[in-house]
Structure formats: C-alpha cells, structure tokens
Length: 139
Image 1 (cartoon, rainbow, N blue to C red):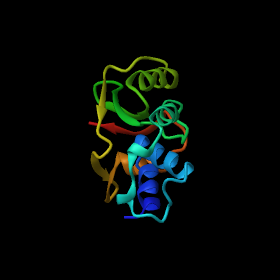
Image 2: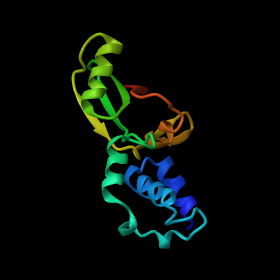
Image 3: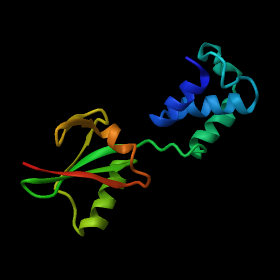
C-alpha cells in the first residue's frame, strides 16, 4: 500500500494519530506520498510536534461517536457527537429537555435503511457539522 492510500484511508476513517504522523513526516520530507507504507518510520517524527498537532486537531479530524438517546418509552434518537456530554447538550438544545438515557453505539453497527444495510460510519461520511442527528428509531 502506498503512503498516499494509507493517508487518505486515515483521513476518511478519522484515524487521527496516524494521519498526523504521516502529515508531519511528509512535511519534514522524510516520506513521499508515492513511497510504500512500509517505509513509514515513526521514530523519525518529532513526537512533541505531532502531539501538539493532534491536541490542536491540526488536520480537522475529530473523534466522532454515535449515541442513542431515549426520548420516551418508544422513541430514540441517534446523535453523532465527540463525547457523551456533547451529545446530551445537543439533545437538550434541540429538544428542550433531557434524554431518559444515553448509550454509545459502535460506528460499525449495521442496520437496515430501506432495503439497504448501512452503518453509522457510512452515514457519518455525509455529515459536515457535528454534533448532528443521525436518525430516529421507534420500537
């Protein structure tokens, strides 16, 4: 696999630390996009600079989770957010009250939407601003 393919995969799948390491090594010209990914040597990176980039989310990669919020006995809303606290705050702003509970779901959780099977990870690709509502479910 080429470095550029791994880098794009990291960006698309929100693998922040690896993406920042690759970016740093590219920036320092210790790596080229057309190199084989086996040439990546993280020891060559300035750990302090990479940690600072990750902390400041230099590449704009946020860890995104999906949370199920119970609205009432039958209805649930799924919200993409960086944390449980952020998801609950968004719920309160949007619906004017607190959810009955909040549970994190895996991004790779699959379900039917119409006749197609989709995962939350797939759904997240089309959303540009977070937190955001992923969808609703009624028992």
